[in-house]
Length: 407
Image (cartoon, rainbow, N blue to C red; front, side, top):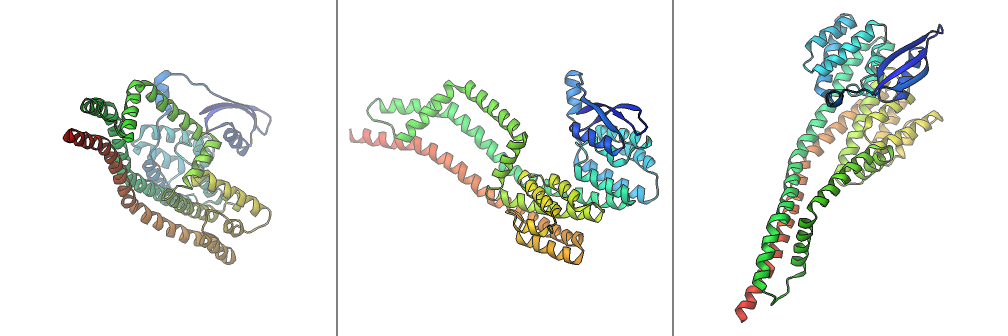
């Protein structure tokens, strides 16, 4: 979203401008960080019709962010000035939308704005973790080193997402075919079979309960086809909207953490992401409380994020981080034990990197075995559907043929 702001500078002058941000709070926080006092922040209602909507809907691929981060780290480490590095990367960018983003960042940096604050304007490309690590790198004078770590972290995330997507491609394809086949059979095949069975029985025998149930379901679907598709479409849309709300997202994530197999993958991914992100932030000099808050937002699960916020509150009250995590429902005891060792030795970042490596290997193993688990389940579902239809058809035919034979 784009916001227009009016703020007062330190010398009392009014400053106006427009920025891209997720909400007003982000704009206000960025202005305060730059030394301005926000007076008015309002969202800009941009027009432009379908073309403008299409442009706003453009996304930046994770691959583009990885290449950008890796190359920026290399050029800065080689002593190339930041603005020149960004200009070089803009010229090399294949994604036109991403090139436009880099162009805005160049203008901001040339105007004296910190790189992290400029990156924060584009949440569709740079996450909160990314922005905060860049800010920490700028504050500590180790931006090139931080960018190297960021590139490695983004590559890890991209690799895990790719593996999950690859593992889910086959099950999703089979499920889609199953749903299409079910509707096709119920709309076109079952009515014809029902007509044949009625002609054969000629009122002399009653069809089995499961056959009558299937025929009734098919008849209902035929008569109310439009209504059914409207209800399914509206229901899906409402469900997606509800899941995007804070309460809906929390409940959906809570449900995922109770689903067999899926919960194992989510928890292991969350722990790996927590360990690597928290270690990177700590090594960059970010405070524990801020690192916990930023890491919670990067986990990708609202339930575990709430646990980390609670842990941050307890740390604020004087406890060690290992204490609240040891009582967590989702963090295994080994994570708290490793954290305890890190706290005692002063090497939390080193210990957590090892935890991240371990759980990333665990995620790889679970994902690799995902297909072998899901494929039999899909076969059972397909077999059950085919078996039910076969029983509904062959049972009455067998019964009717016996009646004909006795006569």
